[in-house]
Image 1 (cartoon, rainbow, N blue to C red):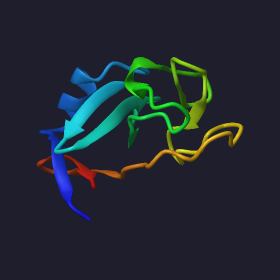
Image 2 (cartoon, helix red, strand yellow):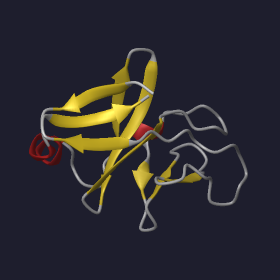
Image 3 (cartoon, helix red, strand yellow):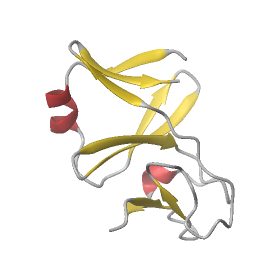
Amino acid sequence: MRWVKIFKSAQEANARLPENKPQLLVVGDQRICLVKHKDHLYAVSNTCTHNGESLNKGQINYAGEVVCPWHGYQFNLQTGREYLERSADLETFPIRVEEDGLYLGL
């Protein structure tokens, strides 16, 4: 696994990421949906496995799922699993906090 620094500190991440607003993060050729939900950071693949829409255009629901803006498919931010198992799971990416910043595992 390769670790890529995405923020200089947890404070920077908190300042730059609004709560429950999916953000697009591009690392090399990977498009990742980055979400701060209940003060925890999650990273999942940005492409809906049902129809290919960008999940950073979606919303976060009360259950901690990113909801696809096209057809409402709901993916758990922790596991990547679609709520009703109607399509394949999303890839999830680990995030770790180090003294010198936040890192995303690819």
